[in-house]
Image (cartoon, rainbow, N blue to C red; front, side):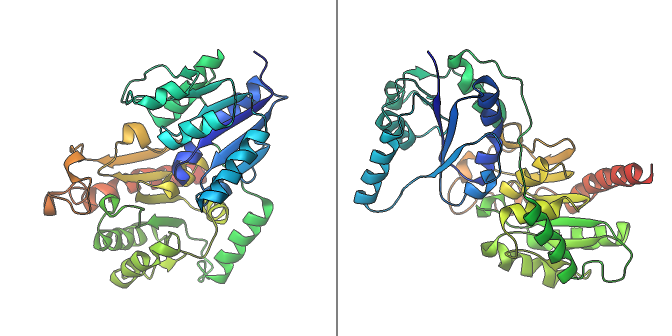
Length: 347
């Protein structure tokens, strides 16, 4: 079957969308003349704004019923002849049917009814497979066995200009010593993923003392409060950048940094995608599935079964999976990676 008009559906969060980019690259290599459209949730579109393999970004409609119906009619009129659903969700499966595409590929690891809505269900995969490999496996029904690539993130020159101006405005090199920059990301989408703010503050002080580096506290606008908490508890006067930059501006700023340290989340995947060394802190999620896919990274993870704690509070108290990660452990991981940066820059 000739494929000329492809829709990929990924109705998840920022990190999930970024981890799916190898699928877009693989489809472009296999079908260089096809139109490639990506359906995503609002708030994740910036991650793909400059991706060269994508022809069109479509934002999913979640408003009133009338608006959703008009959205579905618009999708059907686009005449897709291939839909690849990477969402693992019932809603996206219905959307794939509504497009009218004769070729609809999706996952159904839960063996739910949605498997009936696809023309091809992707082959069941091992539970311990990383999400990058998992998503790429959706292309097997197309006869594709693509080479695995790292997630890709593209920033514009304008993003780079804003990042550089932000560093000047914040006066992070105030003493003219060109000190290394380390980004600490103390927040996360879900509270259960968050390492205690007082430990991030202690880590910031130890890194600043050991490496004479400047500490930047990242995050979006909603995470500014936790960044403020870390700043108040730290003696090294870290600089808050939380809420100051767009996603791609933040990615451009990371390219000036020697290290990223943070909880499992979208910022961690952004740092890995722009090849910044990453120290990632994992608790209730599994690093073998969701870990950073950059060239240099270390993961701190205690391997607890956290399924009982997937609700607003954790039943483990002070013995929860994030609190079991010590400052010493994180500092030593940072030390190993920063020593590598020193060796590289001294060559």
